[in-house]
Image (cartoon, rainbow, N blue to C red; front, side):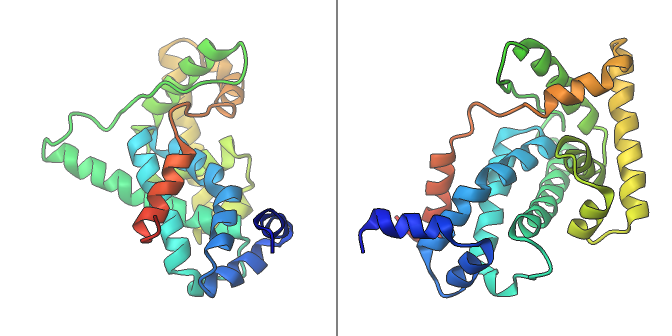
Length: 227
């Protein structure tokens, strides 16, 4: 079969069919799932962690889990939901690692700001919103940071996030409310509390211009022993 025809057929296959193929060791199916979900995982981890290096580490870990733990895939979840679940777990571990390193003086602060880009002329305001977001996240628990990324920035419902994380809707609502309070408090520091909804609109457009998806894919494949 022509490689282009095979690639076209893969693109037409459902996520569940691709997962089944991955369980048989099909690397082309795995590559297609990366095509579909690498951006979602990278974007979500970036919003939770506010740090490119940590975000890339989480993204690589999540897709390694997809390959190594595919037989444990729970079909109650869509593939996107399953990957987001893994993303939240890995991001939480990364935050805990960062805070331990801070306690032992290996790093100076848990707040690391990066310069994202926006898709239009609002670039400056978006970067300002992102810096405030990062400062707020540095005061959040790992759960609050994940819930804010999913509920507010990805616009998912409390029910969806509760299902993904395995936590009660009450805990998700509470985490969301406290995370929003922390963002509003940061805005209040700059007399911009009234701009909360406007700033969230800008944050939804944020992307990290220096995230190289080709390099990430190469790193994932390299760790799987595929050059």
